[in-house]
Length: 136
Image (tube, rainbow, N blue to C red; front, side, top):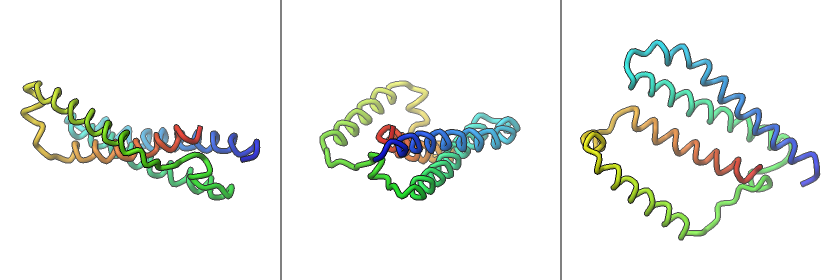
C-alpha cells in the first residue's frame, strides 16, 4: 500500500461513522415518538442496523473505487479455532451468570422483535468492528 491509501482508508472509515450518525439522527424523531421502551429500542436498533449496512456499503464502494479489497486493508478471517471456542465458552458462562438474576431469567426465553433486532445489530456491529480494527 502506498502512502496515500492508508489516509484514504481512514477517511472512508470516518465517512462510515458520519453515515451511521446521520441515519440515527434521521430516526431520532421516530424514536422519541414511541411511547414504550420496546418501541424506542426497536427503532433505535433498526437505525443502527440500517446505518451500519449503508455505511459499510459506501465504505466498500469507496475502497473498491480505489482498487483495494477488504483483504488489502487487513481483513483476514483466520482459522484460529481456539479463539472462537474461547469466545463461545465465555458467552455461555456469561449467559449462565446472567440467568441467575430472577428478572433476567423470567424473560430470557421469550423471543420478541427487540431481542431479534439486538442480535442482528450485534452481528452487524461485530463484523464492522472487526473490519475497522484491522483496517486502522
